[in-house]
Image 1 (cartoon, one colour):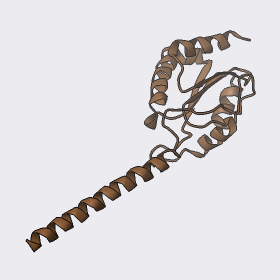
Image 2 (image 1 turned 30 degrees about the vertical axis):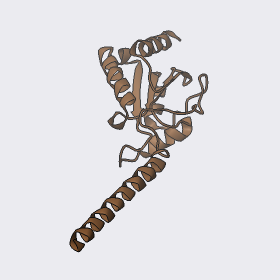
Image 3 (image 1 turned 90 degrees about the vertical axis):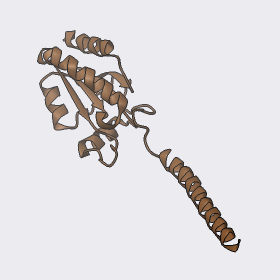
Image 4 (image 1 turned 60 degrees about the vertical axis):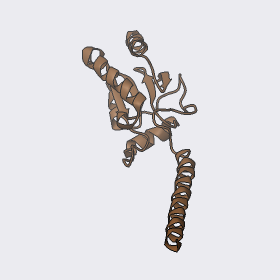
Length: 172
């Protein structure tokens, strides 16, 4: 009988430890998870507003602007963001189907948040700071003069995206 009591107490102690550890991990992971960016959710407002000059601070953006292209700049990356993935897919299809709107528009995308264990590239961090954004995706559509004309947070429909680009291409 004494052996059964000892086994019961050991099992009870083990179960209590497991329960306490489970509660601890749930509470601690919840606390840390709230500090991380929510994947696929842009938050707040960007520092750059419609009508502002776009910070064209990367060589790729500078080159596209010098060539007089309309620029669709997406700050977000599809490998870990469901909305980034959806937008990237239809934008790439549209850019291919229209031959980059007859070579007058450019789609530039960069990662600005950590993707699992992969940090954003330095230019992604520079763009995140320059545009003053949190979370992802953000889509900035920049006209040929370098002015931000449209800003979309989280998602924009393909027909709206196409209409925006075509509108800017008609301008002198």
